[in-house]
Length: 54
Image (cartoon, rainbow, N blue to C red; front, side, top):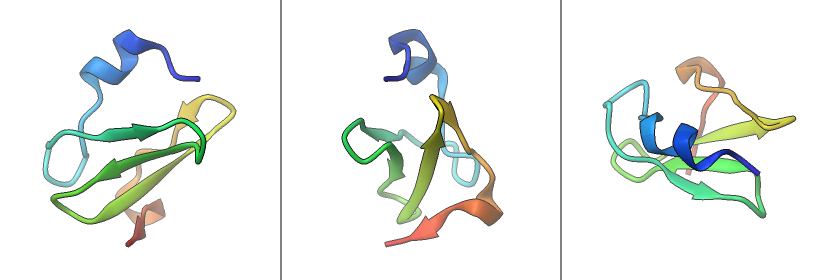
């Protein structure tokens, strides 16, 4: 589970927009870019090249 303070400052690295946190799937989602950023061991992987489209 990610810390609430971290969630407040995280933004999509591509568009700088808001991210939706999906704790059950361990994902951060940017609806504007239609990208999913995975979370591994409570660390968000915020690399555009590592993101998955949806």
